[in-house]
Image 1: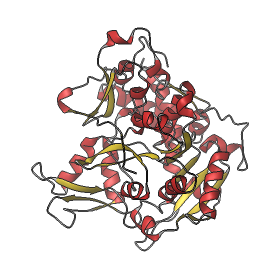
Image 2: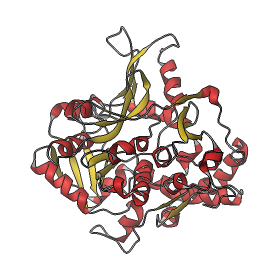
Image 3: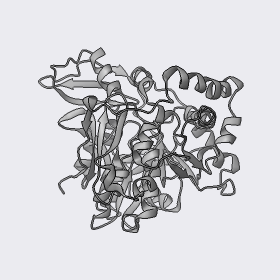
Image 4: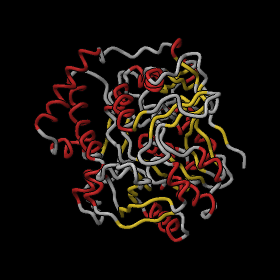
Length: 432
């Protein structure tokens, strides 16, 4: 990144922060707070710039400063060069679901990640799983937790389309008595890898890194707005909020205290179409929707359309030898029921994420032309993916982005408004 100044505050002001939370545990003087800005997402705030001196550890772990995807086109793997350029490293592709029917039903798409998490704790002797789940005191928001048992893992299963920052819990992993599994968004896995590179104590305690196909999350304002549309008023106390699950692909369903049924429901297709329109600028310039730096990536098999009868399944992409060991062990131990899948299923299921990856090259080019700060994404094959777009998509990613920059005033520094922010709660460890 080319920055005129160098502090994590500049990342936020430049609208580049993706909200991973990695800067908080990286700070050696405990000088960073995380806040959830309703219309923007989770962002760091430095308590005192004077306390930073020449320290830049927070920038060294920030994926929005620079992320090296480090897998060049020479690392083609069994699916060939073109697949690697599009999706990053792929050793195996599987399709299937959790063997446990309850986990399969409660989860967003087959329960593969939940089953893998349980396998890591129960059979790989990992201390726990760092992931996110709804905040019990405010279910419209998320809270990072290190889950230590089956009950805690299952309680947090399912997608959460609101801000999360699992890297604010990396100290729990670093200080754990045994390695832990990590489940996070692709951007959070990128931040994890950068954190491992500067912190060997953390690196030795990362048992496996798992992710899900993701276009990054909308801000809290999106969830609150959709709840209002479904009749949840400011005086109602939210008891539970499902974004998906209980069948594939599930419904957005807020339930208020004192009520046994959701106040209202929307299908996944309806709710995501609404929620995603609130996504902040940083989400549109993050290129990796498939978790190229993870050991295992899971996602919906959108090559087939939900018919209301399919209880759900997952595409499971193995990206490393460690990932191969975990998936193989989970199948042999009866946690997962999988069969080999073809590359075309991944291409067709996640085509929107591939187009977003290509569009990122055009958007970054437009930002540079407009004189804006931009992140550095190395070995990401963005130009290759951009060249695969249609002419209209190429124009949209470049000229369309320039129009958006000037129309929305994106060149102006983002100003943090404390009046619309809530401090992010600390990550916690569940009871054993």
